[in-house]
Structures are given as structure tokens and as C-alpha cells.
Length: 211
Figure 1: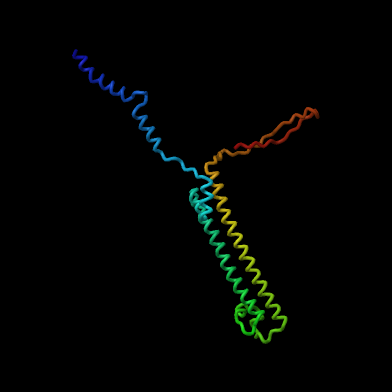
Figure 2: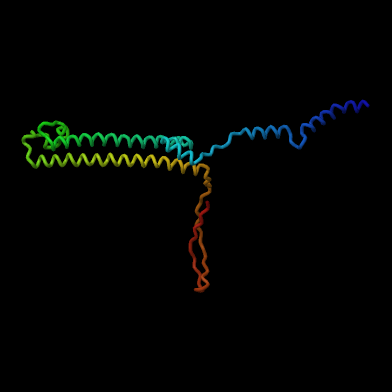
């Protein structure tokens, strides 16, 4: 009887442990499973969202894809385009006004005098010959057209940079989880060819790519 009384607490503990492990799953296993469920889900960008964000504002697509290192390239490109548009636009407006003033009333206008160069600076306008007048007018016109062409080209380049940002965001999102194996190798080995029709044998080199 004394032995039974001593073993009774051990029996109760064993029963309690068996009830907690009912179904073959321990408390530790349940705890591990619950912690696994709380693990944050791996981020995978959506290509449609990426291109929409990039269309709304340049750089948002790269931020959405978490490629922050591309932002200096994006905004650097737009800053360069904006500077080219502004500078060429100002130069075009200045040369345009100077050209119009020069061909309309050069004696009573001064805007074209800011663009004098070379020998034109050394003599007064009254001393200019008809050849000088014609040559200087052509120079103003060519320079005006040059800056207008560069200004228009800068607009086209800006649109191209904008489209390139959208394409980059879309492609980057599509290839975000693209797995490239690090085992890329090239193996060169001799090859043996048995030409049964010609009843002859030949040797060559075989290239094998592993990826």
C-alpha cells in the first residue's frame, strides 16, 4: 500500500503530460508552429503596381521595388534634362529676339549687340558693309535654330527617360525573384566523331555550358 501511495503522484504527472500531448503534438511543437506563422512574408513586388507608381511620379516605381540605389540615376537624368531644356530655351529666346531686332531695325535696337563676336566688336555699325550685315544675320539665325533644335531634342530625351523609368520598374518587378544559379561554367573537352558514311573518323572540340 505504501508503494502504491508513493507511485500515485508519478502516475498523475504522467497522465497530465499525456493529456497535454493528446493528438501527438507537443506544446513545444505548437509554439514553434505559431512562431513560424508569425514570420513576416517575403516581399514580392507587383509589376503592374510598379509601372503605375512610376507613371504617377518618376522614381516611385523604384522605391516600390526597393531599389533605392537607382534613385540618384533617375533624378540625375531628369535634372540634366531640365537644365538642358532651360538653358537651350533661354538661348533660343535671346537669339530669336536679337535676330528679329537686327533684321527689322538694327540702328535703333540693342539686343543684338550682346551677341557680337570677332571683328564685329571692333567697328561701329555704321562701318558695316552689306556683306557684314548679311553674314551676321545668318549667324544669328543659325545659332537660333541650333538652340531651338537642342531644346526640342531635350524634350524628347526627357520623355525617353520617363519611359525608361517605367520600363525599368516593370522589368525589375518581373525579375525580382528570378533565380540565377551561381554555378555558371564553361567546359572545353575533346570530341570524337565517327563518320560511318565516309568510313572515316575525325576529332574536334566540344564546348559544354552548365547553368
